[in-house]
Image (cartoon, rainbow, N blue to C red):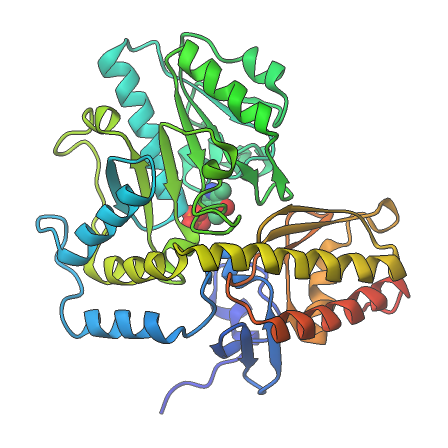
Length: 406
Ligand SMILES: *Cc1c(COP(=O)(O)O)cnc(C)c1O
């Protein structure tokens, strides 16, 4: 007999780093989930921009189980067929010439920052170590990446922090220019700040960063952990902007729910990483390679990219119609299927409350800070699921506006 478990056990047994919803999902298909009581939920959260092909996609199930019957893991003393095929697909689809695989977004950014430091030390000198990042950025939770992130609340308790990281204001080129100089080894930026409130970069801002990096021989790192793998309606957001980074990190949707990540870069930059410079036990194992390869095959298609644009309209039109009646949001922003609904001043700070009421009504949404309700659904969510989810979301918004939210 299996132990019977419920949400209450979370407080009993789990380290209190999360505050999970009051229900426990047990099963899912497409963009619909069911909890322990059999109640259904429409999924606009997508496992935080991860389940880009929804839940239980038949072709991903097949890729995973076929590989599971064949070879799970060898460690990086051996390479494997699925991961080599995925590397080639990523290289063919992007600017990249070399790929490093790991298991999470934080690890991909950690690798990118280490590469930037080593490249500068090997090719220039030890003083070229400055990293410029941005306020409100999110790059992960390792000590290096959380220090590069622009939310001091997440890093300050873990001091002393890695040195020589400075923060400029996002979308403010002058503030970045004031910090970038010949001592800078890298600039790290999200083309769209996700956790920071769903804020797209201005095209001129990214172009300006590219020029500053070229001028000062610093690497431009795009953190596309959230914006990548079709999320914005292009395979990677840099393609929308027409600004090519030196290093790109990708995770979240890359595994479609299987933990995996990659750092993409050029031959020249990759050449400073030699045997023993960096590594990870699980990175690029055959299971991850098989699933990631299938995810990329299924997403990197024009019809899927066009579908993201169509779904973007369904969401924007739907939320704007809700808002016409309820006047809850002052702005709806974002790209593709990364959408942020910014609460008006009367409701500021209430995003978490909407998230809770929405779950009661049967729709899962994300927040991005205290004032932004975020949607990051499957890229192939059905029109019916969007319609049903938005009806439930409207009921949640109505409860909040009428002061009926508990
Ligand atoms: C989620 C996220 C990360 C961290 O990824 P993990 O897999 O949680 O380590 C880094 N950067 C961005 C932009 C993210 O959205």
